[in-house]
Length: 206
Image (tube, rainbow, N blue to C red; front, side, top):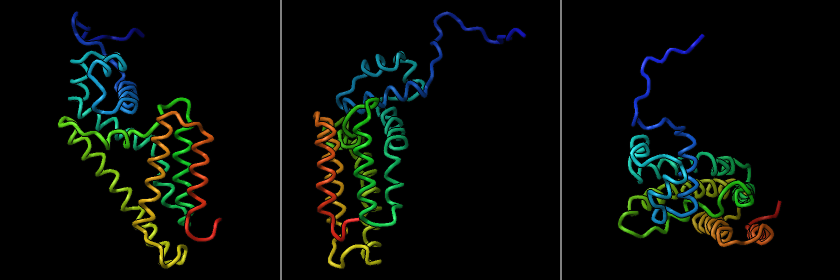
């Protein structure tokens, strides 16, 4: 049966577009260039959407970035929640480091970490963006500290282990892996970094 069009499109009306695909494209631009380095022209070129339509669908650049960051965390950093549930502290570290390694080895995604790139944003325009990124990182940090405190109480980590320092060490390796990947380090180099870091982990190797 022929589809009945109740409201035919008028000349000059913005063309409909797939908001999910546009958000995916915007995420990759922000991931590659960072918030400050991304222009509206970059976003319209990547999404194929005009500025008026982009604003209508997502709001301003800041709102679009936050939606893109939500997508990034949900789709690309989903390994973090799974890692924290590992039965041992070493298992947590191993799952996190290998999760980051696998993400950086992907040929379909940009290298580096969207959160790390934008945590160093320093312009006035990016102040709220940096605060948002750092707040998300703090949630992960606190979850790891709590997990390592639990591991120490259970005897999975030595009694003299400092969960705060151990978390800082692990986060530094995770961020360093992402930064080196973004700078062009090979998979073998990143794999060596992960293996060397796990070799320094307290307790008996699993």
